[in-house]
Amino acid sequence: MLTTLRNSGLCSLLLLVLSCSAGARDLDQDEALRLRQAGHILPLEQLLGIALQRYPGAILLEAELEEEDDILIYEVELLTRQGVVRELELDARDGRILKDEVDD
Image (cartoon, rainbow, N blue to C red; front, side):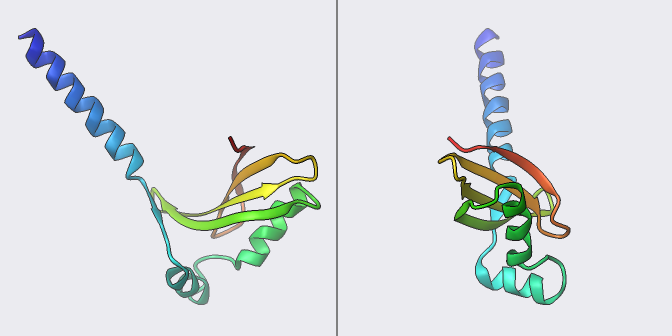
């Protein structure tokens, strides 16, 4: 019985990990263009402006559009003037900064 409970617990943990990692979906450039043209998301240039207001003089390293829990998010990586890589998540619909942290 202990083995059955242990196996059941491991299966539950594995399902939880898999469901958490499956929450985000990367969108390609065609999907991003379609969403922008339909007015569902802001232009990337506008969102980058918001990020660069927070970190003037930073350099864009990477930007990608993701759908996470039915929310469209731009994940942006910036290299600040101080040489620190920051990862920001911005709501693609309105530009709100949802996350801002040092990227490891």
